[in-house]
Image (cartoon, rainbow over all chains, first blue to last red; front, side):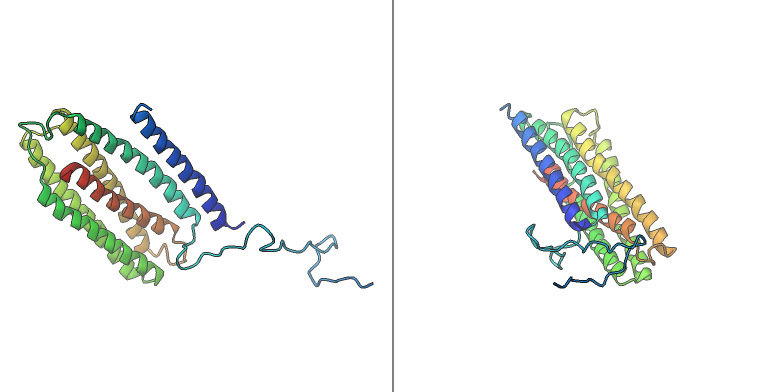
Length: 32
Length: 220
């Protein structure tokens, strides 16, 4: 696996984490 | 029965090294970066980490601002000065122009044109500095009109949001100044341009953030 492919995998993990945090913040915000 | 002989250089212990792993053998083809799929190298990835953190930080601040604004009985509160929408709008164009100068700097870097690179970096920095000067002038006027950090939620959220962005512009400005100085000394002539690309990415982020804040704080 070259650097580009490995970094894209890491980026996918990062964006998943950010997305999960944003959704959690929204749900907490509306007191779900 | 014949044995397939491979003409590969032997290791120091006399053994023939194993063949290189095959590509496209079941785990999908190797995807090479194309012109529409730029290479995601370590510099870009590191900057994306930083920018994700910054986006979440500003996301929190903007959310707090919007919650306070929506729950307020009247916005802006009575007897509070109105924000300078027109001047700041022109100032927004100045900041966006600095991003154009930074794009020109990146193109000069690709052409190995050091002189143009330094000039464009300095142009971008000068436009960013002009943005800060106008912002500072408007702040002084607003404080004279009575809008301070202690003027309730209106003043607090305004100075926190806009001040945090201004602090980022100051940091980006210092970064651009150091980068221009290094470029003028020929630091990037050997093709190791990671530092300057990181600087450009950060600058574009700081510039792209401003219209969002302008619409949220000044126009909405």
